[in-house]
Image 1: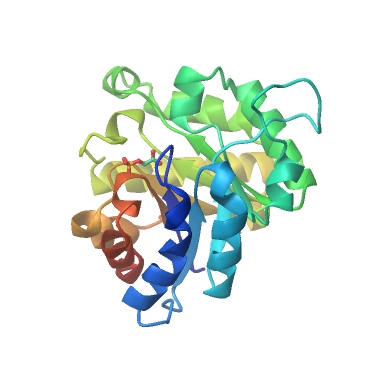
Image 2 (image 1 turned 45 degrees about the horizontal axis):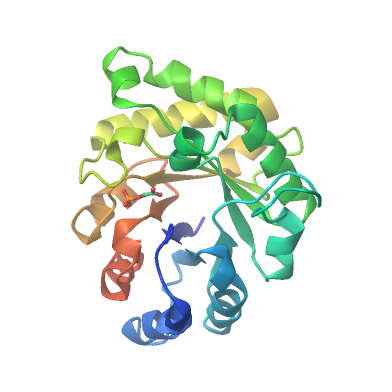
Length: 248
Ligand code: PGA
């Protein structure tokens, strides 16, 4: 399985960032390593331009969020189909920032992921424990509960990616230990196995996210059960992001 290296730009960037796929491609000497699949998730207003440029250079593009409804009176929101109309291939669902600040409960995340799958895209479903939950020994149970309540029934390894992002590791410079990452990824795969069976679980892409940077990418990406990375801060500079792609 190729490692899925995804850039989550969050609310960063501007119109002239549409040339970032070209910049990235130049840094990579025009070739994406065979072992990596590159995904860029810009703010949705820039999605069409970024997606079209990403596709030109053999990369994918995704939205950072969508609404679960097809249409309606939801001021400021976009539907999954609208993201697909902007040529997105993926949509991130239930990032911890959305869970913490925008009311994305497990049920909301599940509804969003369902609409992403119905719109023929891949849902990247984010899960992860807080520091308090980890320290109290509740990391596994927290993540398991999120998985069971956030993953849609229609999930397969083809239409779903799970991103394990410990909340305390996001944007903090702290990363989970490689041992903790390996154990949590194995736990996630076993919960998915229980929900959807052996074949799906074997093929499921599980990304790690939380302060992934050039200096730790190689170790993290070579940890057993890690099939990719969801990168925030270090994806804003193409030189850094390229190093992470090369680490795959
Ligand atoms: P970070 O963010 O790499 O800046 O920690 C990761 C994420 O939030 O997806």
